Image (cartoon, rainbow, N blue to C red; front, side, top):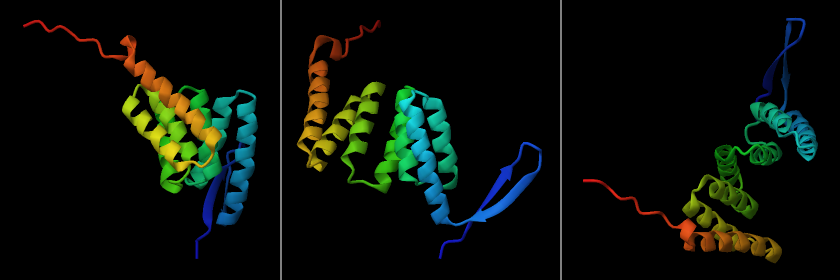
Length: 162
């Protein structure tokens, strides 16, 4: 049996209140806040969405909805290292979700980690049964491969002075 969670709230008056909640109520609360975070993202307020997600994750670090929205908020904020960390966490919770691999692959691509990106794209294609999704991931992988084969995608040799 799971123990109730103890939550401490600090009120603006300077007093605080401690109460206990069960995991089910935290879960329901988390989904409501995650929906609000999604609305914040739709209004391009990624920092408010991120704050909402962090509020949920402080209570339930494995809340899928909050983690998914957090990854999106980090993406909108250009925080690609954070996107990789969150999608890696999501993949530990749900390793068969190809969308998490695609998102992590795109974040790795943005970070310049091309091998990691390619590996995630390949996994996403192999894991998905949705041909439209697979086509989208293939397009991203084809663009990555074409760029790597182009002159600007190849490393430039550096002359060393002896």
